Image 1: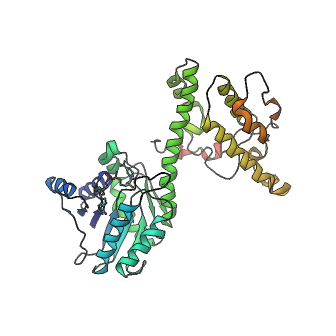
Image 2: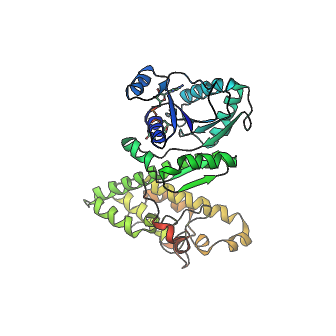
Image 3: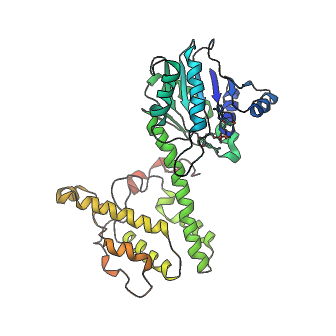
Length: 352
Ligand SMILES: NC(=O)c1ccc[n+]([C@@H]2O[C@H](COP(=O)([O-])OP(=O)(O)OC[C@H]3O[C@@H](n4cnc5c(N)ncnc54)[C@H](O)[C@@H]3O)[C@@H](O)[C@H]2O)c1
């Protein structure tokens, strides 16, 4: 297959080199002359400019940088690189599929890349060129290996043929392949993937702060919890959104630990947010009326918590004003598909 990689840094180089190894013809494009020289020095076909004039149908991977600028992506390089692809499409002989591999906000492939390519090329998305999202999950420190042996390949495209051809291209690398009928879902997967990893790390850093205060060995604690907490060892636990946690233990124990930590002088913003998010979901169900509540799983109906107590729990002192009267009626603990989702697939994949 003919492949172009636009933006030949960490991800672009790993992508292109992996695809060369599986028999594809790859050209690397990069705006930085020193990067192009470096890649040429490795014996790779690397160029400053993309020229599609006499090329057959190809995949054009966008692996352009998307650094952050405050609480959003700085898309200046991404937009500039996408425009160069659009200009190259203007005089292209083949029908090319532009695959967004950069990490972007959900909706970017169809909401930004498609319109930019149409504007620059004068072609129409769907017949003049095709679009897909194929986010990258590799880690910078082991980019080449992670590309060659992916834990997961995610493809999002509206066109069935694009889905199949992209899956075929990436099949030699192995690992499970998840195909979605639109790019936005694939983009969301990548965002949620990174946010989940970040949240878990920050959660354990919060626990570390408390353990440190108590002069306990957090590593021994976290190693044990990683094997005892179903949310840690069961991939299906707690992932169906839309309902709060409840049961006998989770509501009271989250509240109690927030107060306990405050008592030893440690603020836990993540735990406070966990409780606040749960309270919002409880409020949402209250608004649905009794029919709606009855239709909810038992675990979603039992965690009745007093909102004012939640919000003030961060300042609760041990032994003074503990929110002890909020125990819900006994019910199945926690929210999550637990047993029914804990099947043969549960050992699949290693969290990274
Ligand atoms: N590095 C990682 O571990 C990793 C993992 C997964 C996803 N990602 C995502 O992949 C994307 C690329 O990241 P990266 O780490 O490879 O970035 P990088 O900075 O290593 O590489 C980007 C390359 O694009 C080139 N470039 C910039 N503007 C250009 C333009 N207009 N035209 C052509 N080339 C241009 C730069 O010169 C650079 O070589 C980002 O969205 C990133 O978030 C990165």
